[in-house]
Image 1 (cartoon, rainbow, N blue to C red):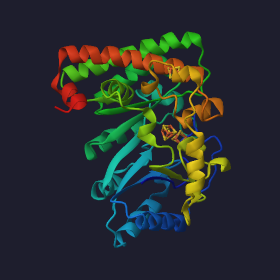
Image 2 (image 1 turned 90 degrees about the horizontal axis):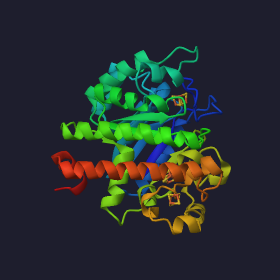
Image 3 (image 1 turned 90 degrees about the vertical axis):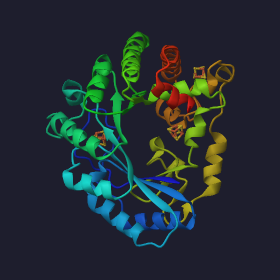
Length: 358
Ligand code: SF4
Ligand code: SF4
Ligand code: SF4
């Protein structure tokens, strides 16, 4: 099982688009962490992943140290790995050494791009930009760990610079880029052309890097290309709403996915008692009800319309797909197919190995 532990709801940045809209000073109690570790050990899983999450989890480095010490003190066959989602502000040399020593498999590093773009939204409480610290720490982090994912938020006011930002992130060493589209923004029809234009430019950057043997991963294209190659793929297989991932809120309640944290309707257990299987199964049963339009859509197996989280944040209903999701999915799939075709015709080794495993 993968856990995302919300160590704190507090943050040292004040990003303009922050999803933690009701930021509080709530923090995780260490007793809750102990309970969830004990619960996971009882499950006898071979592997387990603990992700430290927030707010900004590095405001509570002490809890990270205590959690890992607690796990080490246990006599268990479960192999625990760790991950971290951070804004990078507090990733100092000492903590990077700690990460290297302690089975951290990946870091989700929030960074929007070059100086202009990063400082547009990702600001400190006093209004100053975070670029200088975040970009320097990103370079150091990339030297420490292979698996560092640039988590880029795509908003209306950064879209026009998105391809420049991707280029910047690749230039400082990122190999994995996750473009997180802000579906909640007030997108309109005229934005669709701009979205297509910018993502097409990014697909050219991807192509150029792969052909020049720089093994980058831009996850939106990688995922969509995979859905073409493996036609048995369905998007919801990847996440299994509440089955593989558990979100542990600061108060110790368990949720099936990120957008539901804090909403009592979606609590599926708590740290002491673990997962309430009946509640979880009922939620799963009520999820993935496709509309007739989607059922008949030629790209339904390649589209993320079954993502309960996205449907919930856009339509307040886990089964209703918003027009912006439908339109952007079509754009992303079209561009990915064009990209894949160009790459297949050029046949670079990295592409063939990555998607065809030969
Ligand atoms: S770093 Fe994350 S939690 Fe902190 S203000 Fe920015 S978006 Fe919100
Ligand atoms: S592209 Fe639109 S119609 Fe087709 S499956 Fe996705 S959301 Fe449904
Ligand atoms: S609801 Fe969406 S984001 Fe959440 S686990 Fe499922 S597919 Fe992933």
